[in-house]
Image (tube, rainbow, N blue to C red):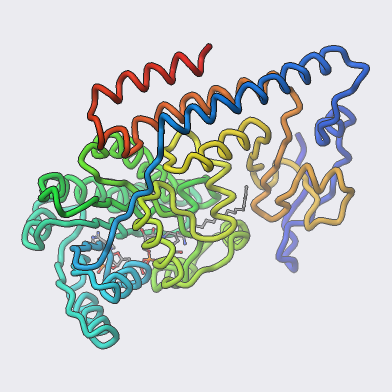
Length: 429
Ligand SMILES: NC(=O)C1=CN([C@@H]2O[C@H](COP(=O)(O)OP(=O)(O)OC[C@H]3O[C@@H](n4cnc5c(N)ncnc54)[C@H](OP(=O)(O)O)[C@@H]3O)[C@@H](O)[C@H]2O)C=CC1
Ligand SMILES: CCCCCCCCCCCCCCCC(=O)[C@@H](N)CO
């Protein structure tokens, strides 16, 4: 397919020559079942039937799962934050201290740590403990974690980042990002988990939060190494949640957009223009806004913590089978997945109208006409919608039940197993 647009040196946006949509695709954009089409009517009836049938099923599932809201307090609890000497980590430390937590921060530079301690003391009157270690050095990290004492809320926020095309990226740079962002988080969780699991039962639920990025939800030009390191955190988090839920530990993943921090200032000095354009479509947040969203998410035990509107959209589009503590959100995620498909179109591969100025069909078809180039397709195949909805619903509910605090907490694993079995057979009837 030929390239239909190119960058214009004087324009913030690539010049786009809109392509007329092929007739077949135009009809896909609006879902209007054609009454002359027997198959369509047949599927329409089938679909209505399934919708009707699904209501009692959902009510039944709701009563089995009986979700209980999780509350993880910060007051008088030990919050341990890596990368707590700068940017988002520093904002997290300020706010956690202000909420009455005992705060420990860890980073490499002792000077920056001391500076952070002073600034937190000045604004809150509270002294935080500081630890100097490199998260890549397991032994040093373990010593710091042991010295700090049992942790209630562990926030793996440390991170290094810069944007470069893979071709121009040196191997050691890739390894550095993966080692700090991903392996460093493994080191941290390994070091802290035993004491977190053995905490006295009356200390209440605990949290392990990992700082990802919107570039950890969707791959972005210039971020091959960074995105890979942040996507990796998601695998770590999803699997870890299964392993620790019985210990009343909740895992969270935080997905901020660009955030105004010393780290970003450095990154922006040498960023490919395309990266800047794409990233700009999700705006820029302040470190204390991100920290606020993050702490609220942690306190409510949310697995996925988006930080802005675009982040909520991305979270819906990329929910996958990640744990969902809210019955309603689990339902919405599955319904959205069955009905629409959001896909990103690599720059230069296909021309899209930009900004909106085209016909209503194109606006509906390509709702996110930013340089991010998200194409939103509406699924017009009813059988497909039905299967998509029920398969993701089935899987999500099995996970939902596995992870529902009520089930594990109240009656233990035996009860969990028969409920999982029941849900499976119910959903695959
Ligand atoms: N700013 C942004 O636009 C966004 C950032 N994020 C993520 O948020 C997190 C924080 O970012 P931000 O506040 O901007 O970053 P900053 O660069 O401002 O701060 C990074 C912190 O991590 C520490 N750190 C870095 N490397 C190591 C290491 N090897 N061992 C221990 N500590 C280390 C730094 O201290 P020291 O150098 O002294 O070790 C510093 O305290 C990162 O994980 C980042 O990927 C996500 C989305 C957007
Ligand atoms: C379906 C809805 C789509 C909505 C549009 C979403 C646009 C996505 C933009 C992603 C921005 C990524 C920022 C990464 C910041 C970061 O981590 C760096 N500062 C560190 O390198």
